[in-house]
Amino acid sequence: MKQVEIYTSPLCGFCHAAKRLLKQKGVNFSEVNILANPGRKPEMIQRAHGRHTVPQIFVGDRHVGGCDELYALERAGKLDSLLAA
Image (cartoon, rainbow, N blue to C red; front, side, top):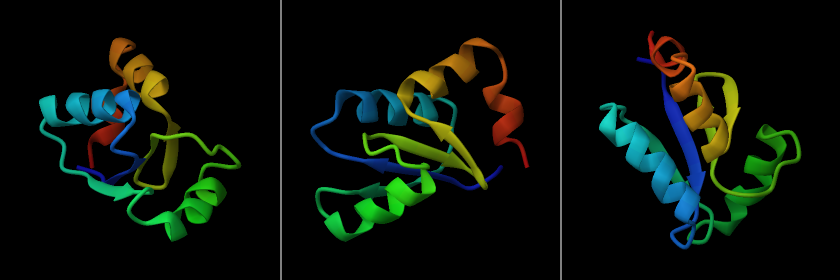
């Protein structure tokens, strides 16, 4: 399975929903809480091509986007193949 990284905030409902989907699928992911680590927010913005909202989700080298994009991949049946090694 590819490495998954998600930038989040504990106050963000979309972050919780994205993490819930990943957990339901048995995906291990690393999480960067930008409230606890504000110095990582510029890194997130750069990696996400200027997007500054959370969550920002990365699968391997690919920027998936946010929660809506993650769920759209799942609905389209494309998330499993993206996550596969």
